Length: 292
Image (cartoon, rainbow, N blue to C red):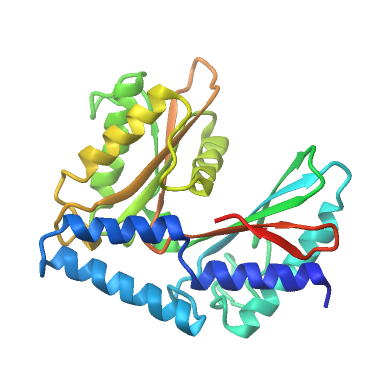
């Protein structure tokens, strides 16, 4: 087994079993805002117990280990084909070891071959950069939170949402309302304003690679993120829809150019089991640094 494969198996294990520190801090901070012994507080306490057990036992945080999304930044000339082949073998081995549940099924037959590999699974997003290192970030996105993603086309007459940032705010909050009690909240929103239908959703998911405690470098988007987070947490939906002050842990928004005829707002939702991790790799494939 190659060093690269070893490193990717460890990346998968850690992503599946350990919540990133920034997410864990946000969950613990949310507990301070909830009324003691309320349903919301108890739900967050159970979430925290789940996090601790998964890390201690090196077992998946959630039984739905989800879609496997690799985001890979590589030097110019790097062999992406070999990386993808090695990553698929790593996924198969991680599944065999129990780090991933046997989650991927054939969409035509419904059969599950137990490998988590097949057309589009795992998914790879390669990008070249002018650095010597390989940077690999991995997200495991469960089906429950994927089900409550939404895409809006502005203007939306029903929501009185026009083609402006206030219209975007209205439809993003509508997505939160529609998701209440579903998607294993408290959740995190990744949003893309603009683009076409496909790239909008794709770019919305890249927002989950940001740290929860960061700030958008674009002031207008930073204001929108913070405003939506505040308003969503005043809706009373709360963890798992039990009521309370913690409906969302974060909101991350990006923009993409669009054609004049279209104005899409694509909203992806991540559950509290926010599984995202990353590494930089040396030329031989050994882990140089953990990114989160």
